[in-house]
Length: 146
Image 1 (cartoon, rainbow, N blue to C red):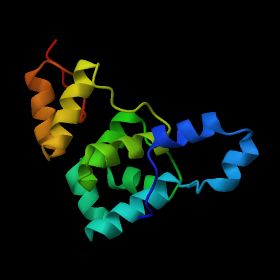
Image 2: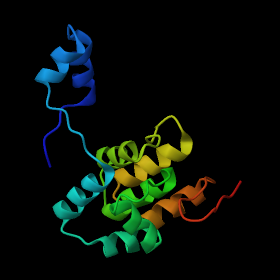
Image 3: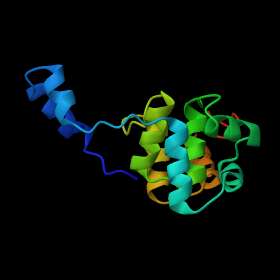
Image 4: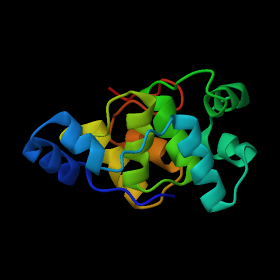
């Protein structure tokens, strides 16, 4: 995967630029699509889409349509996809961003639990168990204690 500058660093450079052209001419910006990023993750991990289907809990058609660029996942499906790919927190946030949905926010109770589960390397099923334990909506289905 190409090395990327931190968004905060790029923002500082943009804000200090004399014009948009000055920024755009000197920065290596990456125009990445969600399917391209997902394939990069697959290649990096040496796994197949079928493994992502099993680990994510998503319907195979949904996964194949997302990988094929036919559709963008909703937020929970993007999170489930991140679990299926074994993403780090940073990678999961990028999946969410490229899907065009809100990133995980540690100030939101449910998101904080999901972030912790990703950081700990838990599976999607284990994350759902943790969400259920805390009375939050699970990723798979509509399980909720409250």
